[in-house]
Amino acid sequence: MASPLASRRTGRRLAADAGLLVVAATFALPLAWVILSAVDPHADLRVKAPDGLTLAHFTAVLKPDITFTPLLNSLLLCGGGTLLTVVCAALAAYPLSRFPSRLNRPFLLTILFATSLPITAIMVPVYALYVRVNLIDTLQGTVLFFAASQLPFAIWLMKNFMDSVPKELEEAAWTDGANSAQSLVRIVLPLMAPGAAVVTVFSFVMMWGNFFVPFMLLLTPDQMPASVSINEFFGNRGMVAYGQLAAFSVIYSTPVILLYVLIARRLGGGFALGGAMKG
Image (cartoon, rainbow, N blue to C red; front, side, top):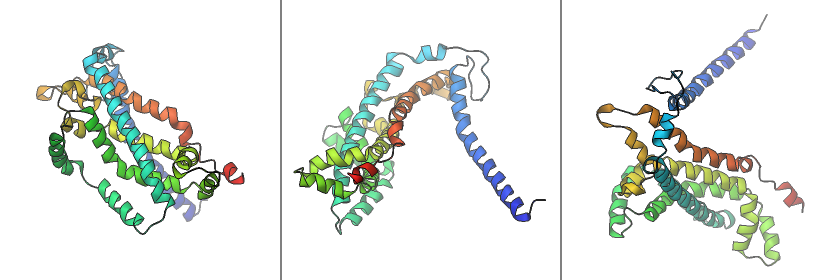
């Protein structure tokens, strides 16, 4: 006969499993709707088995003005913004990690505060500034704002990963004549490659799904990214092309999935510092 303590543990475990199943369902149902509706000729808001299978929704959206041009714009904006964010975050995190100072903590707290600012609160002055410096309706201006908005948290992440790389490895490189820039590029960054991969994925995903920033800073329809052009599937008077919306969503999600798959090895590869320390 089970003891009262064992019964309570079993009850807690079952309650935790039930809670996890509910959470999993909240994520699985929207995903199931997207996949099923993309091939359902009579797609609507319900999650249901398709009445039949069709690729007409994909055929309807696979056009330059609907999918290809917006996706290319998204890749240019998010790729450029991610590259700029990772480079600047590495350069900013290196002195914070390697050169202790009484100003480091106030600086980190300041940039942490910057991450809590709502984007809507700063868009009005940013828009006015961009109009003055002729960066409004330009891809490069949007890339700069993407990078600036993601940089504070990227610096936090990058510094934490950089702290895990022993300074003794750099000191050995300095003894051999390397300077700080060379030790950063040749020693620190290769050893913290999984951390850089995390920053890359986080920054890219946050930029890829951003609707408000390009919607405000870009005016020309041909420069709009996919995160904004998806709004075209919502017609007037509540009419929505659900099948085409689902098909576009599948295509829109593919670059993010591919990025994660490409660097998944580094995400789970660890820092591999043991052999370096032995040498």
